[in-house]
Length: 113
Length: 113
Image (cartoon, rainbow over all chains, first blue to last red; front, side, top):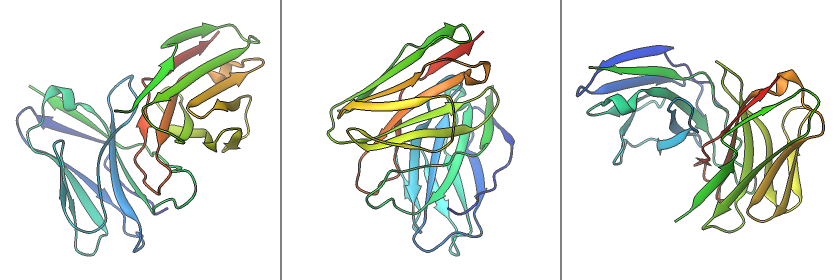
C-alpha cells in the first residue's frame, strides 16, 4: 500500500469549509484513496473513496489531483460534530481476500465556534 | 440494512483473568470480519481477520485469539490477560468483493488492572 502523509492537526471554524490534505506520491495506478474518520471513543466511519475522478456524497467531497499524488477531503460546512481524527488510506482492491486496512495517525480536526 | 453489534462497551478485568468479546453482524451474509485494537493515543492495529467460518488469520503475535463459530459471529478471547492487553477493541465487517469499505462496531474499552 502506498504511504500517506497528513498534517497532525487542523482547526476550522464552524460553518466554514474544512479542507484536509493528504499526500500519496507513491500511489499506484490501481490504488484507491479512502477517507475514514473517528470521533472520540467511537469506531471509524467510512466517508468517501475515489480512484481519479472527484467524488461527492452527502458527507464530503474528495478532490484528487490529476497526477493522483495528493488529494483533499472537503467538509463543505463543518459543524462541531465533525471534530474527529480523519484518516487517508491508499489501497488497491482486495480481490478474494480481506480488506486489511492500515490506519495511520491521521489528522485531528478541531471545529470551533 | 446491515448492523454490527459489539459488547460489552466497557470492561475492567484483573491481570490473569480470561477474556471474551463478542461481535455479531446482521443483514448480510458471508462477510469478512476483523478485530482491531487501539491503545491509548495510538493508531488502530489489525489483530485478526476472517474470510469465513473457522478461518482465522492473525496479523500480529499476541496473547489473544479469535474464533468464528458462525457466519456472522466473531469472538476475541484470551486465557490470561496482561496489562498490555488494555485498549479499545473494535470489530468490523466488509463485503467480500474487493471493496475496502469497513463498517465498525462501537467498540469495547478494556482496562486490565
